[in-house]
Image 1 (tube, rainbow, N blue to C red):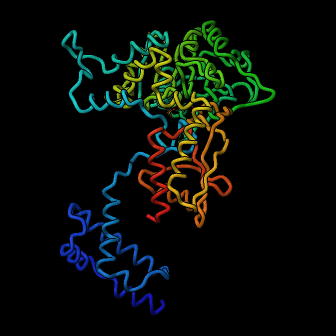
Image 2: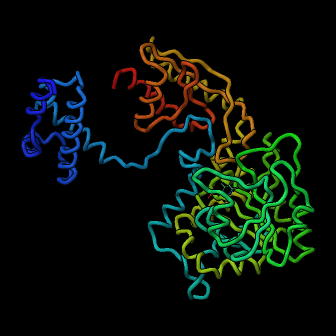
Image 3: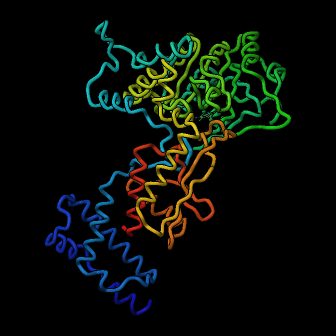
Length: 471
Ligand SMILES: *Cc1c(COP(=O)(O)O)cnc(C)c1O
């Protein structure tokens, strides 16, 4: 070890000494004692690691009480922040799985706040004055909107698929097309989920083409279910064929076998009216006569994390009786959010205007362009010659594994700062409060206006102001 390192290590004070110095100066007065001691320890540990690594920027002045207390205040400050915090999504990915997927509409969030901070009739029937079902508040409205006979909600769609398979096909066979054995993020793979549910996967057809006789030829006494899976996050192009849901439903009817569809995302609104790829709605899908349909609450539906199960009454009765529903049940916050969201869906134009996911997906290029220009103007107003901005054309993405090929023309603001690399800007904005998450393209830091909320424009401007001031 070099002499300088040894001498620095010797000068590094102990926890008790720093604690005493803190008590004398009290740079922050509201730090709980255990947190303070922890912050001192981690700060000293970090300094020791830096000394051992031969960090040239360290010298004895780093260990002056004032300097050290400042480092510890910063560490304590950081520990007192919430780990889970709001961020500004400037990535242009609307249903961003890493950034919380869907945003609840303000009115929905308010309802959640009220229900969660008060007693509620969660499992109490106010008309009968007796115990009620926690799912009743959303069952009727789900049926009303989708035309389903019965409905049920669990923790997420992965749970909905698992519960449905476990109920309908444990110890039996489930027929699925080879082209639909999907893996989605977070290691949810149809073959694995199937195995865990105790159902046996019977693959039919080929990767690119599966026909009705492929299913029919695989049906035997052990068959319990015909399953269709939405290929959410990929598309098979070229010489392809799959069996339409209607034909699968007819085949199921012929052999008295239930047909289930893992729909992944899921929508009540026909997005093709707004220029997006056509995807049948839940109403149209239920009208095929399908027995079971499962989808997410927080993908293109734009609500809270939940797994929605729609289907025939007798099938849903079986699912509700499965003891696993207790392990997968949703809490009152989710129920409150889902019910309030479903109320918005009673009127399509209300839903498209009020539900952020829907609003962002259907924004016109003109509106996005004006948002991008407003952001650029705010940045220009900072009046710093080192900052260069351009308006750029780009493509946003739906995200959440939905409509992977969908092009969503958008406008972005690209930023350059003289003396800072794009990587440095990306890091500084990400470490700001609130963090601003954008992306790098060539030598620019890029922010997509589609996913930036109106009131966030001013926040982004002040983020850049403080970055430029070196704060
Ligand atoms: C997203 C998805 C799931 C899982 O849904 P979660 O709500 O994330 O649990 C299951 N199947 C398909 C086809 C999906 O796209």
